[in-house]
Length: 73
Image (tube, one colour):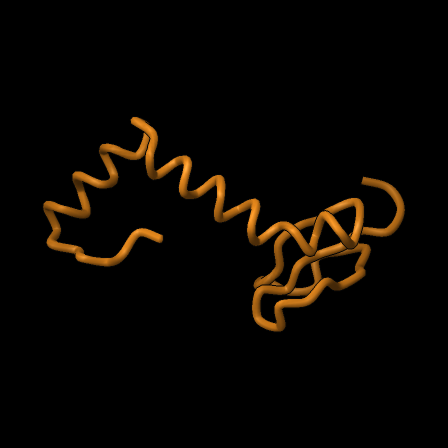
């Protein structure tokens, strides 16, 4: 990706500009600040869709077997 990159910092819940990844708790890079700002909602939407898909069944079964009652989103 050329030019300025934008990252979403999960700790500060803010958008950061950086040519390289600013820290381990960031999502990105994104090509615009707006795209970075929307990224947590997009990632959550994708995670929910995956949890509802057949692909996640083996992982849900493993969680049930281990007695993990963690709320999956």
